[in-house]
Length: 496
Ligand code: ADP
Image (tube, rainbow, N blue to C red; front, side):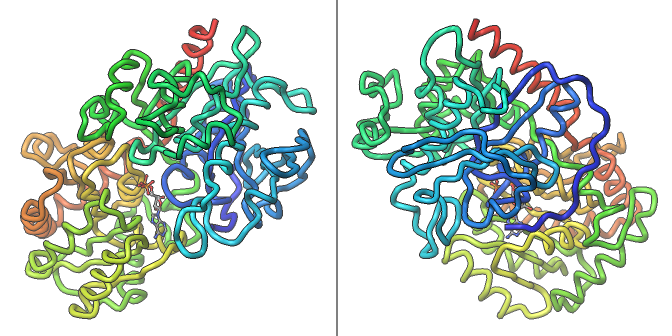
């Protein structure tokens, strides 16, 4: 969990003519385990430029209520699956938040999805069924302050059941559901249907049943007016079994209703010129970046060699392909490069990287954990950001890398393919390259890429040009926020 860093300055926005409710399980900087939180925390202010007033509904995990300014009760619920609950409205870090205060579900030590033992909470079906149910209640009845959303926008499986809690009829809001990662499907036993008071007649293959179980992700996919996912390439990949992971049939069926809208980042919060965590630099004053590189070397104990400093800031899961980095480490070392890694996740990967650091002191520096501020320092000081994912719906780390002049080295998949201009011959001759793309899923390709990037690093003028291109690449929300606004308008038409 990151502390409040900087409150966004709000420019005068056009009059809001659409009310949007986000239903989401994490939101930066209040609570974050990955990119979903960054999106939920930064898209609302971009949407305000397109006439949308957005409020973000999320669970009041332990400690969150303390971060809410001017919290006011706007809904009370006598019994939300076994305990009383209320919705508190307030502002947190400049965001309009609605916190679902249900202590029996959320007030406990641990993460949003897992307990202190790192296992999933055994009542996650109820914890997130409740979130979806309250999202629907707000959509149907509105809040006691008179606000009622035109559109309810659910994110990932945690919000998937929402459409099934909305009564049918003209009076309901339009619904939009976004897939941030289809690998997480919210699958629970059939007993959850009764536990959550869901309509039994929708427990069938056309509803939320998934091979005898309940899938909350599938509920969102079949029940929502419009769908989106976080890049155009991922949107087309999802209809293939290798990427749809069992959901490809529904994706194909709903093909015309699903739009790929690439993620942006909060360019005010992530600005190398003003970031309080780094020594300021811009594309025009790139020499000043050097201070951050030296600081990163000092902080991580690298004894620097001539090659590039690669970096990884990531969850350590098979999706991210970091086992390929481990397998290709000899090539990294041979290319005179070094590696700074910040991440946590699978025990085997954590151990693998710890061992690699022990075996290569001064060349491989590993920090196991989650550290938002260190992430900023890494993007500002490293020469590259490695994202060798096997699949990647959008990916945000490469966008932060671009913004901070750490050239992304990415697998050609999903949003990585859409956001990095590969340094191929044509791109270099046109002077537009911003990073390096490679074929996904291969340790030998990773090893070759380490060699190729190290050779490119030797050409300082070309490298600097790529850094400038990268830092100037538009990675904010402008275009994508307009696309969401259009999607909302289509959802309203669909409902009507
Ligand atoms: P995903 O959502 O699949 O984890 P993304 O690339 O979309 O991947 O987003 C990851 C986000 O989480 C980025 O903001 C990244 O900086 C951050 N992050 C990941 N791991 C860490 C970590 N160990 N410490 C700090 N930030 C991290």
